[in-house]
Image 1 (cartoon, rainbow, N blue to C red):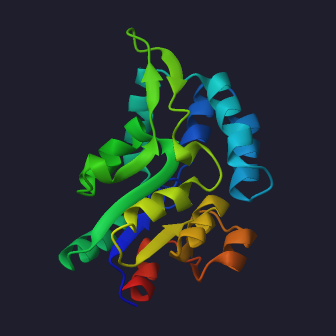
Image 2 (spheres, helix red, strand yellow):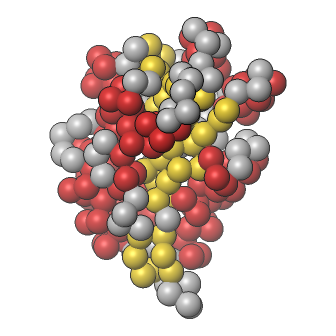
Length: 213
């Protein structure tokens, strides 16, 4: 297959962690948040039903986001750098599409040479003192179907697109005409295994290369 645009989820795809769960653990709410995240990624509840609830409880400040940014890089999935280098050598357009918090993902994107304009995620809004104020409630990525909306925007000038991710929200990219690769190397989800056009449970992201190039 010959795709023009390659889009990757972040949490449990590029990095081994779920960012919101790590932020929750940091403030003693880990188990509760993990259950909400898992319910959304398995399609048991709509993303918008849990998004605001999670952030209003955690209230991540600037320091927490900086800490999470480092953790994303520290816990990078095996083979990610190789995959991005290979695709870049083929002059492919690379994007990250995530329901995660954009400021925490940007440093990981930078080491993968993905420019900020190609990082699609949810912005956190801070007070002047760096404390949590809100998040961008207008972002499509804070609700179900948001990844399909972003994919439609990327496809508005034509071409073909592949979305690689681990959760139900990634499978929604099919609504935009994307080819979807399920990556179960970190978390193996039955709904993704069933709905993906191709599925890999190998621990290295390199396992998807032969199916997207």
